[in-house]
Image 1 (cartoon, rainbow, N blue to C red):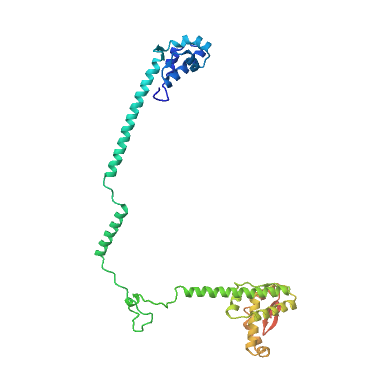
Image 2 (image 1 turned 180 degrees about the horizontal axis):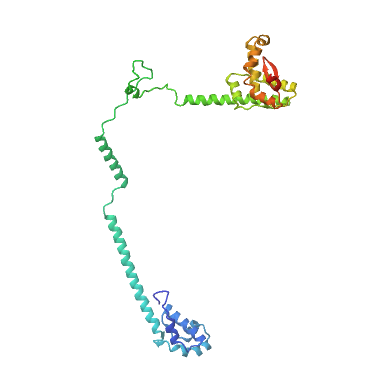
Length: 328
């Protein structure tokens, strides 16, 4: 029985010994060698040998003489000297390998047991905690104790001298203190409300212009529109001013867009007329109002000089200013 499932094979030695064999004889010889390696010496039985070589009885009888010379037939066994030599070598190698493996395993297990029996190292986490505690104790010994903060009532004490910076530096506890950033939040909220209101007025005026077939070009961010919101201009006031502007455009036969500046003059005139008791009281200051607004009309007068009549509302009545009139 072979010690290992593998066998050393030397092709040069084999070919040197079997140069006179036929192909059939080579096949039969190799099969007998492999069986001898796996199962040991072959029995001197032609029927068995023929089956191992894969030959029929007649072919085996013809092949036997050429192959038998490679074996020693003793005690009813076919023994191959090279096979037995390689078998001894394989067994010795297996035993040596097994011995080396056992020694290596013993060395590994011995080292492992030695490591386990050695003193267990300290836990790194425990070491860190101990170091931290020692460091804290050292710092506590070096640093003076921190004084307790002095808390005062939220009620303002008029006796405290504000010029004393140490008094101002002391913390003051107050559960009624105004949250930080509230004024800024209030300002943002007021600005948002102002933009919303300006958008509502602009939407109203643009829709009013569309209904009349007139272009009203007002935007929520325009300074005049923001002034309307700041001064509390109502939707009725804005709508009345837009109606007056549309009527003036239609009377003059002009398709010039109605802007926020033009509407501001009408709103101001309407408010002034209402404040002075009506239209008749305002007529007394008609010339003075026209002179005061002359500077504001400069841009539109320039437009009139290019062929577009400028217009303003004085005391609730539209005044169309032509270039020639403005020059006079």
